[in-house]
Image 1 (cartoon, rainbow, N blue to C red):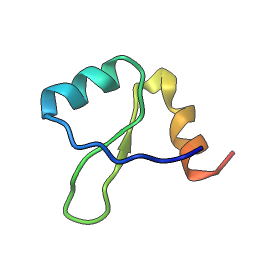
Image 2: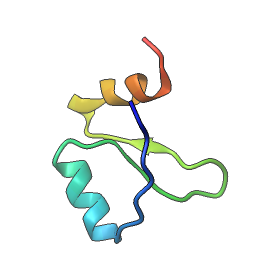
Image 3: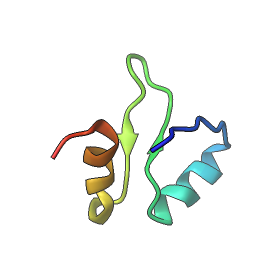
Amino acid sequence: MKNKIIFVSIETLIDRAAAGNLVSFPADTIPPLAARPDKGDLIFLMKGRS
């Protein structure tokens, strides 16, 4: 899987998360990953965990 960073507006970020995509956003420390609860497996897939 190739990762690609795309900078978008907050509205687009929310729309993509609502559509079931994995998203990330700036934070004080490391950027968190977020997904809908039913798509939480995407976080484990991205991090290479089971």
